[in-house]
Length: 186
Length: 401
Image 1: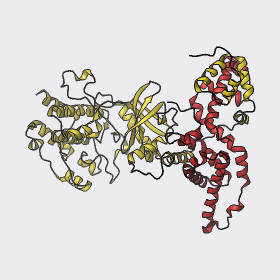
Image 2: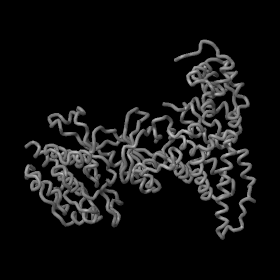
Image 3: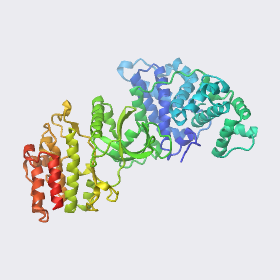
Image 4: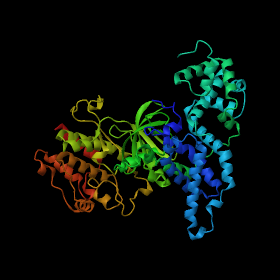
């Protein structure tokens, strides 16, 4: 049976949705990795941090579901940031990095990332992952309309479709994306 | 195919955009939008200012390359954390390590697109884990192009990092694919996706000889002879192509359901299944310069390997004949010819002991079969029958007697 009527966030709450976690990881690894790199971490440190964040999220995600007052983005940021600080504190106890003060390091790059890039990277990755669910023409029609900002009749002429079919393709893809990402973008 | 008679209400369009329509109603509306310019434009307007559409419009970077092995590896590890989420973390039942292995491979697959599948590999939908061995994992899968069920074998995850292991896996798959014989499993297709090499085989009905022996202990003599002859024929075909199996054992002999209506079985006893030799996983092409077993490394399965394999010497096709002798021995007598309480004792038995002749264990076993089996079990390859075809002929002669 298709389970496509639930959002990813809803599926993550349900133990029998065995693929929800995989999808979540596929979706968020590049986002979190870019964020960690934005903090100035080397690739291997960034990878470690992302892995630690996921390890926390496995336990914490269900907890998030019950708190409707928080945005997912803000909540994720808090979880990730806390983990980063904990990591820095651990490291500051090591002699080599004794000078680092974690709370003094509210890196501007990190702020900017959450403001501007989170959504963009998340959507780009979702597009990557979900392209396979659509007919190539459907995908192309939506892409031309939305990403390249062209009108339905223009795209229709180019792809040899009716304008209605181009719009419908666009709606289908957007609807599916919105459904998968609902609650995650805000 | 249902279709709306009239244009929907504006409220319905709003509900469609906000995804609160029931799936069927949404589908009807989507179809309507394909035809109706006016409603299409309305929905377009409704989508103006939509967060998602706006975010998409902001120039997207060219698709993030996720091919980087570091990120793939990261995703793989994070996906494997799933059990903590999927079930109560307090419950930690003893886990089957083979299942873990399969889970690890599943984590590498393309994301599942429908319920009931584990993931994708190439144009295959992976639906189920069938089993795993030292070198690989076997899945049940559906070939989406040819729309048929297949068995798909992949490498184990710990071998995936090794380029040479990967090349070896693919080379072996191709070597096996070159053997076309009714008693050797057919390789449909050899592929590589997401860095995972795999090959597709028919999904067989039936059971491994191993499983049957586990239930029955031993087999009727006509079946012993017939199965042995079929293995020998399959080996002859492989040896002709310069491929040695190197791991002939009951787990690698598949007994197909006897009622598969195969014309090759005409005139043969209906209880005798047709066999396929599986898993050329350890097979090497004879011409392959890397065919030497690495020093000290014992490949093959204790209990069925030849003494020269146990000594990690270079081997030729005659090691398969020794293993065939072991398989015949165990089918006829229900006992392993060389056994011991641990690996060391088994290896000593293999190197030094001569097993009792099968007819001494059961006097119903014909002397000529007993002699052939002992001949195959000669420690010195030069003292064994030299060709699989000769063994097949000798067994066929028994059968027609």
